[in-house]
Image 1 (cartoon, one colour):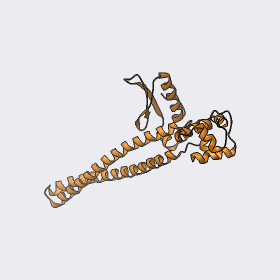
Image 2 (cartoon, rainbow, N blue to C red):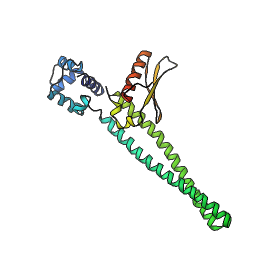
Image 3 (tube, one colour):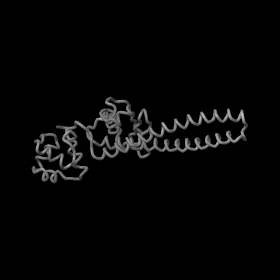
Length: 233
Protein backbone atom coordinates (compact mmCIF):
# COMPACT_ATOMS: atom_id res chain seq x y z
CA UNK A 1 0.00 0.00 0.00
CA UNK A 2 1.92 2.99 -1.30
CA UNK A 3 -0.28 5.65 0.34
CA UNK A 4 -0.03 3.92 3.72
CA UNK A 5 3.75 3.69 3.37
CA UNK A 6 4.03 7.41 2.57
CA UNK A 7 1.74 8.52 5.37
CA UNK A 8 3.34 6.21 7.89
CA UNK A 9 6.77 7.63 7.13
CA UNK A 10 5.39 11.18 7.26
CA UNK A 11 3.75 10.60 10.63
CA UNK A 12 6.87 8.92 12.04
CA UNK A 13 9.03 11.86 10.97
CA UNK A 14 6.54 14.34 12.47
CA UNK A 15 6.80 12.54 15.81
CA UNK A 16 10.57 12.10 15.36
CA UNK A 17 10.49 8.35 15.89
CA UNK A 18 13.23 6.20 14.41
CA UNK A 19 12.30 3.10 12.45
CA UNK A 20 13.68 1.00 15.32
CA UNK A 21 11.49 2.83 17.84
CA UNK A 22 8.44 2.19 15.67
CA UNK A 23 9.37 -1.46 15.29
CA UNK A 24 9.66 -1.78 19.08
CA UNK A 25 6.28 -0.09 19.61
CA UNK A 26 4.45 -2.58 17.39
CA UNK A 27 6.53 -5.64 18.26
CA UNK A 28 8.24 -6.14 14.93
CA UNK A 29 11.82 -6.37 13.76
CA UNK A 30 13.28 -3.16 12.29
CA UNK A 31 13.62 -4.85 8.90
CA UNK A 32 9.96 -5.97 9.03
CA UNK A 33 8.80 -2.46 9.81
CA UNK A 34 11.05 -1.00 7.12
CA UNK A 35 9.36 -3.20 4.51
CA UNK A 36 6.01 -1.63 5.42
CA UNK A 37 7.43 1.88 4.93
CA UNK A 38 8.94 0.79 1.61
CA UNK A 39 5.54 -0.58 0.54
CA UNK A 40 7.05 -4.04 0.20
CA UNK A 41 4.75 -5.53 2.84
CA UNK A 42 1.20 -4.79 3.97
CA UNK A 43 0.58 -4.61 7.72
CA UNK A 44 -1.77 -7.08 9.36
CA UNK A 45 -4.97 -5.72 10.86
CA UNK A 46 -3.66 -5.74 14.43
CA UNK A 47 -0.55 -3.84 13.34
CA UNK A 48 -2.69 -1.30 11.44
CA UNK A 49 -4.72 -0.72 14.62
CA UNK A 50 -1.48 -0.14 16.56
CA UNK A 51 -0.40 2.47 14.01
CA UNK A 52 -3.75 4.24 14.46
CA UNK A 53 -3.33 4.26 18.24
CA UNK A 54 0.27 5.46 18.14
CA UNK A 55 -0.46 8.41 15.84
CA UNK A 56 -4.09 9.02 16.89
CA UNK A 57 -5.38 8.77 13.33
CA UNK A 58 -8.04 6.65 11.66
CA UNK A 59 -7.38 3.65 9.45
CA UNK A 60 -9.07 5.58 6.63
CA UNK A 61 -6.43 8.31 7.03
CA UNK A 62 -3.57 5.83 6.86
CA UNK A 63 -5.11 4.16 3.81
CA UNK A 64 -5.65 7.49 2.03
CA UNK A 65 -9.45 7.31 2.10
CA UNK A 66 -9.71 10.57 4.04
CA UNK A 67 -7.43 13.50 4.83
CA UNK A 68 -8.69 14.51 8.28
CA UNK A 69 -5.79 15.12 10.63
CA UNK A 70 -5.67 16.58 14.14
CA UNK A 71 -3.91 19.80 13.20
CA UNK A 72 -6.48 20.48 10.47
CA UNK A 73 -9.50 20.28 12.81
CA UNK A 74 -8.72 23.45 14.75
CA UNK A 75 -7.77 25.34 11.59
CA UNK A 76 -10.96 24.21 9.86
CA UNK A 77 -13.10 25.28 12.84
CA UNK A 78 -11.39 28.67 13.04
CA UNK A 79 -11.95 29.20 9.32
CA UNK A 80 -15.65 28.27 9.50
CA UNK A 81 -16.22 30.53 12.53
CA UNK A 82 -14.57 33.44 10.74
CA UNK A 83 -16.69 32.82 7.62
CA UNK A 84 -19.86 32.90 9.74
CA UNK A 85 -18.82 36.10 11.49
CA UNK A 86 -17.89 37.67 8.16
CA UNK A 87 -21.23 36.72 6.62
CA UNK A 88 -23.10 38.26 9.57
CA UNK A 89 -21.07 41.47 9.33
CA UNK A 90 -21.71 41.73 5.58
CA UNK A 91 -25.46 41.45 6.15
CA UNK A 92 -25.24 44.09 8.89
CA UNK A 93 -23.23 46.36 6.59
CA UNK A 94 -25.90 46.10 3.88
CA UNK A 95 -28.57 46.92 6.45
CA UNK A 96 -26.72 50.08 7.41
CA UNK A 97 -26.21 50.99 3.76
CA UNK A 98 -29.99 50.85 3.32
CA UNK A 99 -30.50 52.94 6.47
CA UNK A 100 -27.98 55.53 5.28
CA UNK A 101 -29.65 55.76 1.88
CA UNK A 102 -33.11 56.20 3.44
CA UNK A 103 -31.85 58.76 5.97
CA UNK A 104 -30.20 60.80 3.23
CA UNK A 105 -33.50 60.91 1.36
CA UNK A 106 -35.30 61.91 4.58
CA UNK A 107 -32.68 64.59 5.29
CA UNK A 108 -33.07 66.14 1.84
CA UNK A 109 -36.86 66.09 2.14
CA UNK A 110 -36.81 67.61 5.63
CA UNK A 111 -34.25 70.26 4.67
CA UNK A 112 -36.33 71.33 1.68
CA UNK A 113 -39.52 71.60 3.73
CA UNK A 114 -38.22 72.92 7.07
CA UNK A 115 -34.64 74.04 6.48
CA UNK A 116 -31.30 72.73 7.73
CA UNK A 117 -31.65 74.42 11.13
CA UNK A 118 -34.95 72.72 11.93
CA UNK A 119 -34.93 70.36 14.91
CA UNK A 120 -36.26 67.41 12.88
CA UNK A 121 -33.65 67.94 10.15
CA UNK A 122 -30.87 68.16 12.73
CA UNK A 123 -32.12 64.98 14.40
CA UNK A 124 -32.09 63.09 11.09
CA UNK A 125 -28.60 64.45 10.38
CA UNK A 126 -27.35 63.20 13.76
CA UNK A 127 -28.76 59.71 13.24
CA UNK A 128 -27.27 59.69 9.74
CA UNK A 129 -23.82 60.57 11.12
CA UNK A 130 -24.10 57.76 13.69
CA UNK A 131 -25.06 55.24 11.00
CA UNK A 132 -22.18 56.36 8.78
CA UNK A 133 -19.77 55.90 11.72
CA UNK A 134 -21.09 52.38 12.39
CA UNK A 135 -20.86 51.55 8.68
CA UNK A 136 -17.25 52.73 8.61
CA UNK A 137 -16.38 50.59 11.64
CA UNK A 138 -18.06 47.57 10.05
CA UNK A 139 -16.20 48.13 6.77
CA UNK A 140 -12.87 48.27 8.56
CA UNK A 141 -13.69 45.12 10.54
CA UNK A 142 -14.77 43.29 7.37
CA UNK A 143 -11.50 44.28 5.69
CA UNK A 144 -9.53 42.87 8.65
CA UNK A 145 -11.58 39.67 8.60
CA UNK A 146 -10.99 39.24 4.87
CA UNK A 147 -7.25 39.58 5.45
CA UNK A 148 -7.43 37.03 8.26
CA UNK A 149 -9.51 34.71 6.07
CA UNK A 150 -6.76 34.79 3.46
CA UNK A 151 -4.14 34.00 6.12
CA UNK A 152 -6.18 31.10 7.52
CA UNK A 153 -6.81 29.61 4.08
CA UNK A 154 -3.11 29.87 3.23
CA UNK A 155 -2.14 28.17 6.52
CA UNK A 156 -4.76 25.48 5.99
CA UNK A 157 -3.64 24.68 2.44
CA UNK A 158 0.03 24.53 3.46
CA UNK A 159 -0.80 22.11 6.27
CA UNK A 160 -3.06 20.09 3.96
CA UNK A 161 -0.40 19.76 1.26
CA UNK A 162 2.08 18.35 3.79
CA UNK A 163 -0.11 15.23 4.03
CA UNK A 164 1.11 12.74 1.41
CA UNK A 165 -1.38 12.18 -1.44
CA UNK A 166 -3.99 14.51 0.10
CA UNK A 167 -6.90 15.32 -2.20
CA UNK A 168 -8.06 18.94 -2.13
CA UNK A 169 -10.97 18.24 -4.48
CA UNK A 170 -12.67 16.31 -1.66
CA UNK A 171 -11.99 19.02 0.95
CA UNK A 172 -14.87 21.46 1.48
CA UNK A 173 -12.70 24.47 2.29
CA UNK A 174 -10.13 23.98 -0.46
CA UNK A 175 -12.61 23.07 -3.18
CA UNK A 176 -14.73 26.14 -2.35
CA UNK A 177 -11.98 28.48 -3.57
CA UNK A 178 -10.75 26.38 -6.51
CA UNK A 179 -9.38 26.52 -9.12
CA UNK A 180 -5.89 27.47 -8.01
CA UNK A 181 -2.91 28.56 -10.03
CA UNK A 182 0.76 28.27 -9.09
CA UNK A 183 3.77 29.96 -10.59
CA UNK A 184 7.51 29.65 -10.19
CA UNK A 185 9.55 32.76 -9.44
CA UNK A 186 13.33 33.02 -9.36
CA UNK A 187 14.73 34.76 -6.27
CA UNK A 188 17.87 36.87 -5.90
CA UNK A 189 19.56 33.80 -4.42
CA UNK A 190 18.87 31.67 -7.52
CA UNK A 191 16.16 29.69 -5.77
CA UNK A 192 12.87 28.76 -7.42
CA UNK A 193 9.91 29.79 -5.28
CA UNK A 194 6.39 28.41 -5.69
CA UNK A 195 3.59 30.95 -5.24
CA UNK A 196 -0.07 29.97 -5.01
CA UNK A 197 -3.08 32.00 -6.15
CA UNK A 198 -6.76 31.26 -5.56
CA UNK A 199 -9.06 32.37 -8.38
CA UNK A 200 -11.80 33.44 -5.97
CA UNK A 201 -9.67 34.79 -3.13
CA UNK A 202 -6.32 36.08 -4.45
CA UNK A 203 -2.69 35.50 -3.52
CA UNK A 204 -2.08 32.75 -0.96
CA UNK A 205 1.63 33.30 -0.62
CA UNK A 206 4.79 31.29 -0.88
CA UNK A 207 4.65 27.48 -0.63
CA UNK A 208 8.30 26.48 -0.88
CA UNK A 209 11.73 27.03 -2.44
CA UNK A 210 13.81 24.70 -4.61
CA UNK A 211 17.34 25.01 -5.95
CA UNK A 212 16.41 23.04 -9.06
CA UNK A 213 13.79 24.39 -11.49
CA UNK A 214 12.82 20.79 -12.31
CA UNK A 215 12.08 20.10 -8.61
CA UNK A 216 9.98 23.26 -8.42
CA UNK A 217 8.11 22.32 -11.59
CA UNK A 218 7.43 18.78 -10.31
CA UNK A 219 6.06 20.20 -7.06
CA UNK A 220 3.99 22.74 -8.97
CA UNK A 221 2.38 19.96 -11.03
CA UNK A 222 1.79 17.82 -7.93
CA UNK A 223 0.05 20.50 -5.85
CA UNK A 224 -2.15 21.64 -8.73
CA UNK A 225 -3.28 18.08 -9.34
CA UNK A 226 -4.11 17.70 -5.67
CA UNK A 227 -5.84 21.08 -5.31
CA UNK A 228 -7.72 21.21 -8.61
CA UNK A 229 -7.90 17.62 -9.78
CA UNK A 230 -6.34 18.86 -13.02
CA UNK A 231 -3.27 20.97 -13.79
CA UNK A 232 -3.85 24.73 -14.13
CA UNK A 233 -0.60 26.65 -14.42
